[in-house]
Image (cartoon, rainbow, N blue to C red; front, side, top):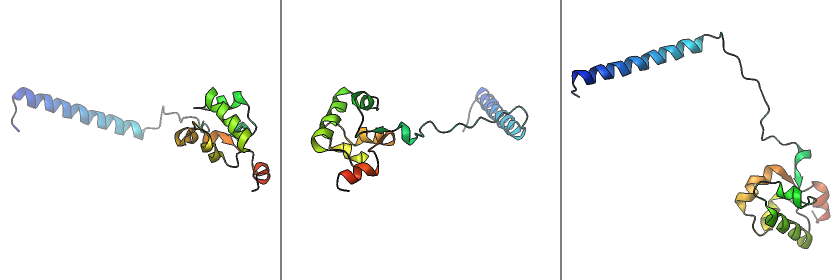
Length: 124
């Protein structure tokens, strides 16, 4: 590719600057002085079992605290729970009108159904 003298000088400067950056980063990565390790923190998404919302015992406000669950969906959960009985598995919330796979996926790691007690009380 032909270019003018100014074009060639510009590309030479760009290449030289890139090479200088590569050398600077390579040198910086080999020196340990001045680099403090980041403190370790447990993942924020980790939820302890006692912090899970039990959809079989939760009230309106507790349900509304879940992402994607407003007052209308929370009331629908309460009505469904009352008319059809407790939820055996968290995925059973899909039977509630207004709760689809997307909403369910967003709350699965934050809910529980109360464990073995509920499964035994529902014939499981």
